[in-house]
Image 1 (cartoon, rainbow, N blue to C red):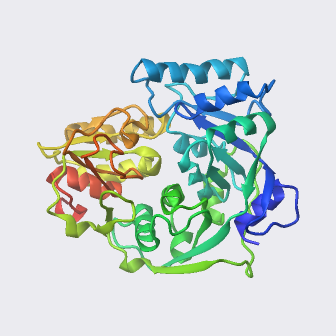
Image 2 (cartoon, rainbow, N blue to C red):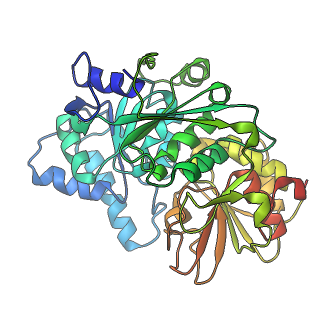
Length: 418
């Protein structure tokens, strides 16, 4: 079996499972945010559930429209707070303690290798970087899982993606996953487990692995996953809040397709409007002027991402025609960025630094685009109207390209400003 099949088999109490089978499986963690949890809470009460299955395995995180941007957002966040108090939930994260959910939960050691995790947010697939099966589900599935502690699944088929070769300077996990989505398309892995492996992955740091698995959904994947190794062990050791288990894929496991990529040939990559699969080398887009730069999100808001952007922009100024918004993904990352004087670098460059929030990624707040405006962002989606007006445009890149673009006022590569 593949690693995905093994985790699903264990959690469904079976020795083995096969692609296409329908199973009920126990979940290790259920999560929802201030947009999706209110629907789940309403359904939870409608079905007459007396209690949650485990007070320490239900995570409610207000991060999308938080800090509350308006009255409606405040009411939705209050639903999470009230529900958490009513059922004495141990994993409610208020503003000041919260972060963007998919950065916060791994950081806090609340998701661990071997877990089965569901979340009412499509980017729940992020945690596959730790060797867990994690996937996004609907709010009604979250409601039933909060009560019963299990969920139904169709066992997905698996695709294997093998990466080899040395990465060029500044090329990272974001470029690898954008290149992959560009190759197979936004529907290239529909309801499949995307398993990433190869010599390049084995040396890839955890933050880059999290970025890759985060965007598996942008290829239609059911989940993204990486077999855990020494890098995984170093990341979870000392932070894991409970026991964990490393699963691996059998050598004779079956895959519907195997794709191989020579990473030495993958350039700094940008996804152009209005699909993540619409990729071009960053160096070819030098004529594209921009109005806004966003560095952050559950895709690229970790401390390593901020360090990368700061290295590019240090001692320089944001172009006067551009606004640059930097959003650390969690409070701990924000504090670390202050200690390392990264925040000082950004402010001296005329960028603004925000408290942790999903904010502009979904066109929520803290950087919504007007008609005709164009942004380059380290986020994960660039659909029509994703960051604001339907006639605005979003380009996706890694933090180094985004920072260089802020300086130039157009899409640029780091070598142009360093």
